[in-house]
Image (tube, rainbow, N blue to C red; front, side, top):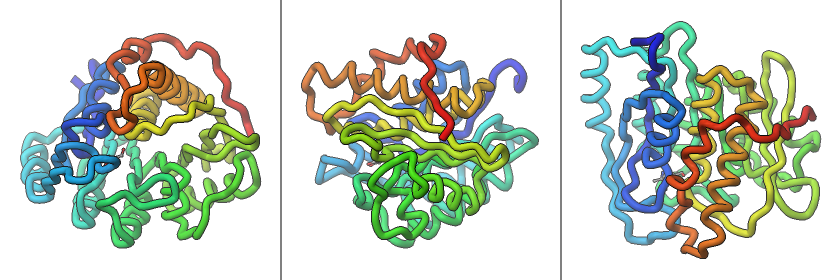
Length: 290
Ligand code: PXL
């Protein structure tokens, strides 16, 4: 089984409407030929960004039961990939899950979902930030956006530019908290508009950057889409910079496909329209060493 298909434990919430979380993780990894075993952290009617009266059911107790069944089944995983967690207690559960199920060569990706645009998400607080800071110590790869990077480092503000000494410093400081690879998204670009993704691999000592094309829109769920493509790409054996390229190109295409239709941003991107492109080679590589 193991050599025929790779299996990933996906520890994320399930939001019914608005895209993101498991609604993105499952189709993306499936399209990349990876089997997804869902360990849901919460069930929501929608994501928390833009729908004020969303329904939220915490699944902390169910997670324990699911994990205990998986232990009895002696499941093993090529990857463990966590995202939005519903409570501080869940952080301890995920840490223990990693300790139990990590085998030789298991890739552990933690997307430290906490906030965006300089603010914490609705359901997050200082306790979740502290817990997430300790959880990333168990990860091989983390994918914070610039806001989450600042929160994890206890930095009061966001840096004004990428490619600078400061963002490299941040990536290095985050990797010193535990993960070998740090991938920071939504980094402000050195020119007026646009953002970039900056990554650091502690083992090679290298820093990479991929510029993201500018579009005047901000769709929820794109962070989950990005981290899912990174996870699938690394599991497929792509290098770190090629995985960055693949994820940036896929998210950009998803945003562009949606943007022309002028739908409300809170409804997310038309993921289904672009999923087939995950099986195409990276069209033009644009990563650079910084
Ligand atoms: O995209 C991260 C995310 C995941 N899950 C839920 C969210 C968000 C961001 O708002 O609300 C429920």
